Length: 331
Image 1 (tube, rainbow, N blue to C red):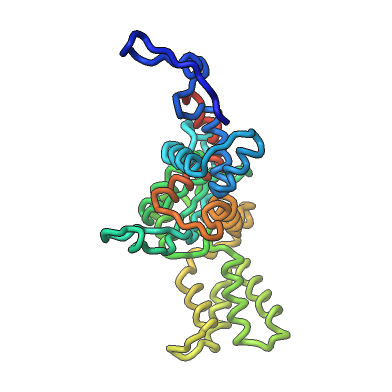
Image 2 (tube, rainbow, N blue to C red; image 1 turned 120 degrees about the vertical axis):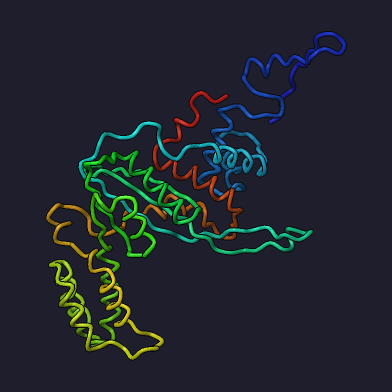
């Protein structure tokens, strides 16, 4: 859309006056706050090319793809993932952490940085925390190290109501770095529980080597029952006679045995169920899909790490209902 504006000047060489820009609150060749919000809104949900189509379709305004990219990433770098004020103190807090791989591009160090660029996968870490009596979780995300993710996890928990008296119920797939960071952050206030369904997958794989195909489901369900009764010792004894020889290429029984034996202090399903706390980490897995993967894993998209973090900020802020807060008071 093209606008012809009256341009005035104070004196022959004096400053320019733009009456329309001043009254409308926009800058020459700039974007009003309302238009910025529109393009960032679409840019955070769709590819930048698709966002340009959406702006044109809904508002009749032609905005270049590059302008949408610049505005979206600029606000992504300044938006805050979490709200300013923490929630009320929580009696019990549910916390989860997991990682997902996203495609990134790192520029080369030679004279032609485009020619020497590297395409690789990098782990985006997502965490959440919510009071056990609430359905809405607070999220945090980072492309940083495990130590950075641990710091973000702690901040999210504090915003969700973590206090000294709060009991913390951790859930996850048992990745060593996640268990370690949980203990660093919350170890003296709660316990970490392995995702029941993740453990069940290990047992189902082991069943393929232990019993006939028509008995595998029955065997797996029996082990699941033992798992829910905190009888991991019986499960390990059932696996022991069927361990594959060392250096076996595919060893599902050995894998299940090792997975359980190394994490026996994370299998207290009886306490979790008696307290009506979840035993599955599907919440964080769902968060990966709608917070991260929906936008950052589009077909053919590769991200510079700094731009990926900016998009993570936007997506996380939206999931935390902090979108409107970002635009208050902006010009």
